[in-house]
Amino acid sequence: MEALTRRNYVLVIAHPDDESMFFLPMIYNIMHDANYKCNKSSLHILCLSNGNYDKLGAIRERELHAAVALISHQIKVTIVRNSKLLDGPKESWSCHLIGTILVGYIQKEKIDKQPVTTLVTFDKGGVSGHANHVDTHEGV
Image 1 (cartoon, rainbow, N blue to C red):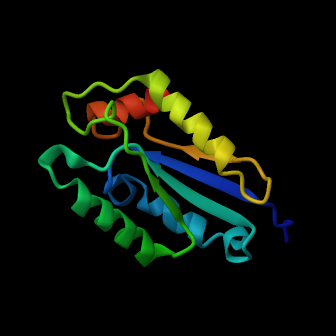
Image 2: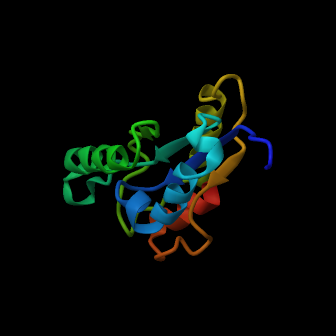
């Protein structure tokens, strides 16, 4: 049997629901990994906007927390509130701003003084081609 090693995952998404639409199989596998079950790993979700494109941001925030709670109460969710990261298919996000937010988050969120070991986000096409997803990939 392989020795259990600490793994600290950070999933960077653009909007509430991205975790369910695009990353649920990965989240499921992390949650069922022996390291996670032995409290040797952690999973954080960093959401770069509240998904307020249709003025439903507050509802979408609650939905994100509720969806994650169904998976595990051990997952930490952080939703960024930044007026330069507005949800919308025609909104352009600064890759530099995303990188700055991510670096600050990673430095702040070291778990038991352990660094982030795995960082996950969208592929270069943003999975669905959504501009915010593409910008998230570029910023990460």
